[in-house]
Every structure is written in C-alpha cells, then in structure tokens.
Image 1: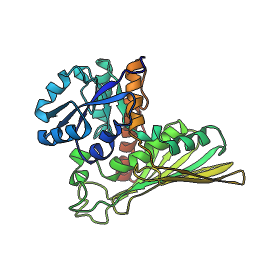
Image 2 (image 1 turned 45 degrees about the vertical axis):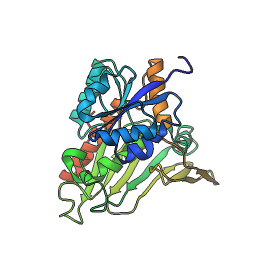
Image 3 (image 1 turned 120 degrees about the vertical axis):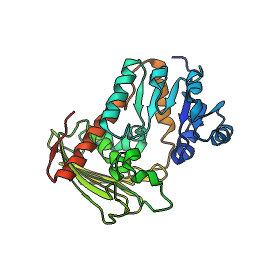
Length: 328
C-alpha cells in the first residue's frame, strides 16, 4: 500500500452532520480525499464543493454520473451495485430487512460496507475499552448508559419523528450508540432484551416513542441498563461496574465536547480528561486503509445489522411488556 495513495470519496446527503463534521474531517484525513458531493439541491452541492475543495458536485438526479466518476472509489451512503465501497451512517437502515439486504448486496458485488460508528476510533472510548479488556475492572457486573437530546418543535429535524424515514424515535437516533458501544466494549452480544417506552406528549410523539428504557442480558452474566429520550437536554454517559473497580465516561457520545473519565480501581482514584478531537477523520482513514489494503473493515455492515436486530427486540419487548429473545 503506497504511502501517498488516497481513496476518493463522494458524500451523498449534505445535512447538518455532513457540513459540521464529515466534510471538515477530510482536511485531517490522511487516506481519504473528498472528490464529489451529491445533494437534492445542486446549488448547495456546488457551494459546499467550493468551500471544502471537492472537484465535482451533483444533484440527486445526477447520482449515476457521480457513480461513473472514476475518481470516486467510496461513497458516504450506498452505491454497491456500481462497484463503489460504502460508508453508511448509523442506523444502517430503518429496519433489519433493509440492513440484511445491504450486507448481502455489498458482499455480492465485492465491495466494503462500513457502519459509521466513530466511537471505535475515539480516544476516551478506546481507553475505556482497554480498561475493560485488560481485566483491571474485574468481572463486569453492570453497565449503565444513556444518551438523550431535547427535540424542539420547529427547531429540531422534523423527520426524526417520522418512522417511515427515521425507523423509530430516540432509540434509533441516539440509543443505538448505547447498544453498539457496549457491545464493542465488552466483545459480546446480548441474547435478550426487556424494555419500557413512554409518551408524555402523545400528540407530538404520535408515531414514535418519546423515551425508552431497556435492559440487555449477555451470555457472560453482564446486564446493560440503558435509556434514551427526546425530552431532556443533550446528555450521555457510560458507567461500568466490575468486581475490582468502576469507571464512568461522561459525556460519552456527542462529538463536540471534551470528555472526562473517572473511576476507582482497587481503591485508587482514576481521572482522565480527553480534549475534543476530530472523530470523523480517523473513521474515514480506517475505511480508506481497508480499501487500499483489501482487508475487512471494522465496524462492518454486519455490526450495523446486528444492532438493528437488537433494537427491534427492544421495541418488541416494549410493545409486548415482556422480555424478548434477540434472534441473530
């Protein structure tokens, strides 16, 4: 793999996250190069292309032309049938049937499918994972985790309350971080889910949950207790309890803020601060490096698919008011 080789990316969909985080991240990426932008509004794509130094800009109706561009090797969305590698935001799809199809099609056409879970590359999460995997916290008993954000009518994205577009409410948008990150931290998957959902404002949250709390049971005996809601200010944490110590990361999931990890291991206090970093550039570089080296990428599409299977079990438990087995 030549040191100066880069993978050309097309970014499809130029919403808030793309403008604030993904597009700026290419400036810090070593293996990924921004080549093209695609938007329903071509003028918007052209304006952002100038700002972020992309060579080409396309409207949604010109997407096929983007896929024919030989300088585009990977797409930040989906274009497997055109032979382009795919980096897709979480959730991978709005349901597990769609995500299973994405995994199948990418495998059929021999292209990489990566789920955009940035926690795999973020320093404080990597530090916490090392604590857990090294055994310093002992045998894990429980993990408490939450991620919530206030959804304000007229200001927040309205489609987040449309299940046909978002797949669900805060569980699909925010709670998925709690599920995927705990799975990644401990290296195992839950076999059962139990949940309770609520709607304090039934009129506004007519089609999706306003909030949901869930429990996941793991084969090792670990219990994960999580929650997510659209009715509190932006807040998140991971609290890990073991037989030898505990550790708490807060805030755990937003990318715009400094993180603080505290804990106690064997009677010794632990405290670390992690400054804000670009969490998207390492993700782009990991994907580009996997493409250039022709090696499997992590987290891949199968991990995104598994998360949707777990979320569906959580939703089913909330509807049935009883524990539900997660079927992989």
